[in-house]
Length: 260
Image (cartoon, rainbow, N blue to C red):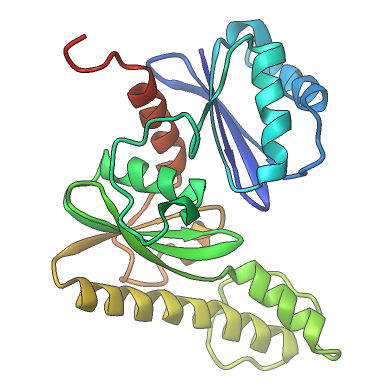
């Protein structure tokens, strides 16, 4: 069985695939200092709830945007799964072109998202990833990554507003009923939430205009569900884009070379 690990700056997703279906998925807070042994204890307990064991896992694929965590994730695979992990950006096979000036600068989450979106949705795409950052990845018809726009994530913006302004409280992100708030909390929620909806709508429109061809817009990421139903700029909300991309990259990395 395959253990797929997708690590962002805020959360890390672990998922188990048996070759046909995803059996389980779990999230934990990203902690760069967490050791392989700590991961193994945590993972063993969750696997047990699904009547699975660490020894059932014999393959691993990893995408992380936290370089200091990779040592421990690699040791988790080596020590407890008895395998060498496929790591996006290192030994894993992407199977598409990264058409930016410095391909090494493309984050693993963006690469995985491009693959996961392309394998399911035809044509050119804009993949809107809502997490610590809000990313707008442009994926061409052939699956190549053409470029990206990156903005701060909605939670990061709300936290920055609280931190920088002494009289503004820390508030939860939610969809307000109206844009004009009647108190401080409502006003902050309205400004940040509807401001981000406008950010998405504006950047999607500008990207489409600049790209010059029809595009489908896919929304994904940890907080993408916040915007479901709030805008027509996003055609499809798909929470499984990155995990699907990890599975496809694993398959591309392990398939025999053509003609072999």
